Length: 83
Image 1 (tube, rainbow, N blue to C red):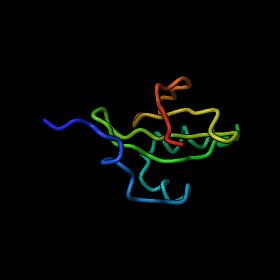
Image 2: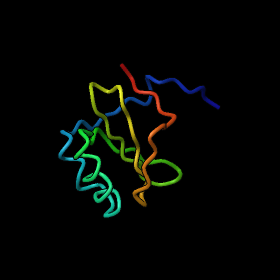
Image 3: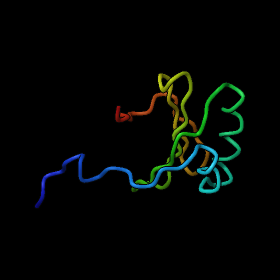
């Protein structure tokens, strides 16, 4: 079994925030539109064992929220971002 090293799992697809929009579920799009009014921007989407998670940020990555596939907002996600 190999040890996990972050260097082996770097993101290879770079997209502009508006290009991620097409990958959101309908529920995520509805919730994201509401969050846009508060200054959040769609940063990226990750696929997890529990489905796609959309990550939105505002104010220079200091405030992060996530949206699950059903549009539920998590205002205190346990997520770490790379520098």
